[in-house]
Image (cartoon, rainbow, N blue to C red; front, side):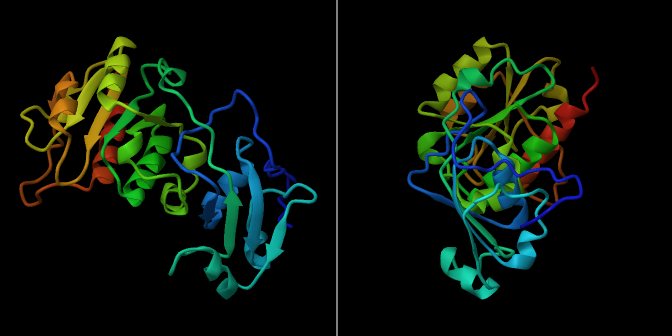
Length: 264
């Protein structure tokens, strides 16, 4: 059992807290998470319903906190854990089986404050990119990410590993109609800035004071035309002409940094 010098308990008993910050993940059945940061964050999340932890003893000792008494742990060798995850998965000796997080609705995250942007993803389907964007959202204080349910990856171990714990802390809102969600976001007082490489204005020029909804499209195709039409302005990052574009997760991180450091 992992211990910390302050004996801070991992709060991961089976069961969810009511009224907490859940996230819609479009997952059914069980979810398997792996890697120290993803597993540790999930164990500390009181909104998670946990079922079983497979662990190498040495890896369990690296966790920050103490598992509740009676928590279901099955000890195994690192090679044995490979059968619980996809091929060549970097599980770091920890695999957690749990239930998906509860859905969260758009109205629950609107109005978080002028300094807490929303990140809207239009058909960004790569789980590594979504996980990396969650990580940047956590780093720069974004209120939530918003995706269309049919065109986004489900909650998964790949997303969680790429998010490095942020899957448990950043609300992930899934909506049926992204255009309608952008209308609701505008009504709540957010300025919707769509990111596109062909835009004339730079992001700094388009960045106003007040709440920001950052709208990012998929790599290659970019934002759909209907989503562009629901933005208040379109902007680009001033990158060198020697490179065509940035990875969507890198672009999101730069834009979120610019929002976090803008002059008041």
